[in-house]
Amino acid sequence: MEDIAINTTVIHLDQLLKWAGIAQSGGQVKSMVEAGIIELNNVIVTERRKKVYPGDIIAIEGLGKWQVTAE
Image 1 (cartoon, rainbow, N blue to C red):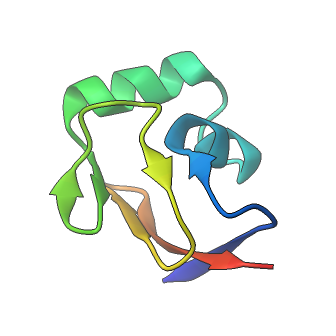
Image 2 (cartoon, rainbow, N blue to C red; image 1 turned 135 degrees about the horizontal axis):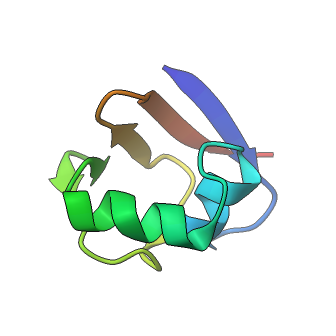
């Protein structure tokens, strides 16, 4: 599991995935959410603007697993 450090108290999932280079665009994140392949803290994500906080764990089927940390 890799860490993704953020310098805010909260970030939206789509922004985080684009910032970390995991997704190329918001449209790609939307497709991933619709496919049901993204989990946040072991719960399938149903909205691309889901709020993510330090300590949260994101898993994407076929891509990997990341823990969000505070800078």
